[in-house]
Image 1: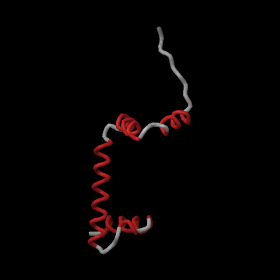
Image 2: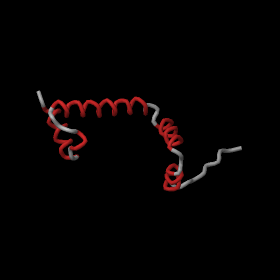
Image 3: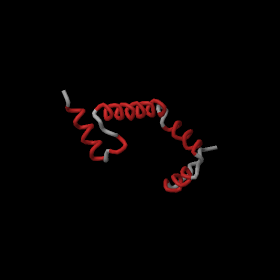
Image 4: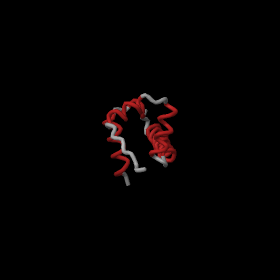
Amino acid sequence: MGTITLEIPEAQIVGWVRRLSPEAKRRLLTALLPDLERWEAAVDYGDQRAREICAHRGLDWDRLTEEEREQLVDTLLHEE
């Protein structure tokens, strides 16, 4: 017997994924992105560091606009 290939439109698959429970979505992401936990840990660390740097400079990360955040990051990248 040969292999059967089923053609399913991507939009339909995306619709199915959107209907999954949060737990099932997480399992799917973990299957698709094996390093998801490491990536999430790095994002959490970066978020924590951004808040610490802001606090040190008398700023509140949560109150900054997206543009102000980008300017801060750009400033930090170019400091010596």
